[in-house]
Length: 242
Image (tube, rainbow, N blue to C red; front, side, top):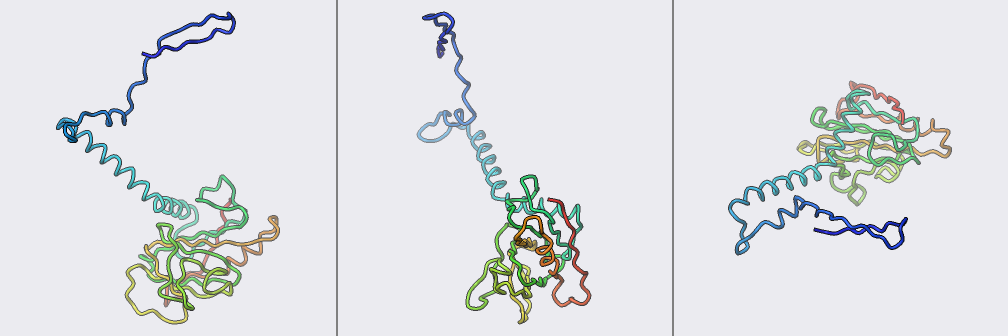
């Protein structure tokens, strides 16, 4: 048992000692201190070690799934408030702040965030307006890759200023992971690793008090199922508060 000595400042030279009981062993101390015979655990301890192994695997599986869990939570929250569909693209009309419930936003741009379902709608066309900068991610938060090379190189998620359209605008064809049909020309074609696709547009401004121009740029976006442009639902751009 440990002894703790306290110096009583009010009475020079006087100390008081009291016994401090040792802290109980932690869960991991107990696991580490289990006896082994010739490097093998005792039969009675095997069940305890198995339960610990299952627990650790469950924790690891949850950590690995965090990107998808986070994406799905943002999708569910957005659709609960603004509705679901390829044609729904919420645009933040204010700069984001620490209270905004999305992952890793910046405050030096404004955002449009949409969620596509390639399982329900099949291949989708995203018409990107000139002057836009954005990214297309799958639901593991991985940038989706171009279907082969575009202009001599492969691309990973970028559209607009840093994408193959070079900020001039263009039509992007987004394929589901299991798509086996023919691929038409005239599109920048990307293939997603998941049926869910996360659309992230960024709007740039010169004056933080004047955000109408980047909003107007993003409102020129069009999204519709491939081959059904004429019959597609028009895009809506609800305005969430930051």
